[in-house]
Length: 219
Image (cartoon, rainbow, N blue to C red; front, side, top):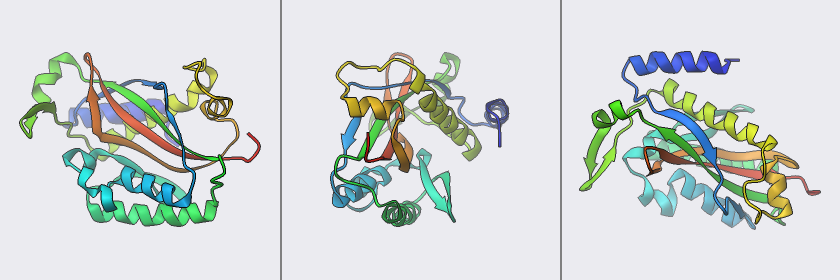
């Protein structure tokens, strides 16, 4: 298993080969990061939106190819980019089958968590990646699979280590506090990092890390 040091070294090599040197900074929880999924139909709707398929295919754009999605390879979960509608449909079908095996409880025990992963692009590099798309000024982020998966691993590690920190908002319910601490989490049904909805702030960029948790009944 690769260490984070090995991952960082690999990312440095990929940046030297032309990948955009986007750097992970931190993750942030908004005031309402949790959404209960109360039925199988709602779960399929959420998956359709996250994967940009079905009625939500219209949300797919150029940046969708940079999204990192959880897929399945045999009994193991893998994470990869989906460069086409067909790829995303294949992942959707696999996750739907996986969901039937997990048998999520929709009586208050299946939740979508959305947190913001904050990245920065060095000022000296910003002009190089600035583009105009649909009449609006934005940035393009050409990244190799190895580089973008490295960013994803930084995001996951940061999410796992937040459990030792303070609850970010006093408004979290007791159940939401338990999810924040990853207490009572039975399984991760699906996870993805969405770069096609990236937001720009003061010198930083934010992408959504979305996770569907199946909770134990006693939480």
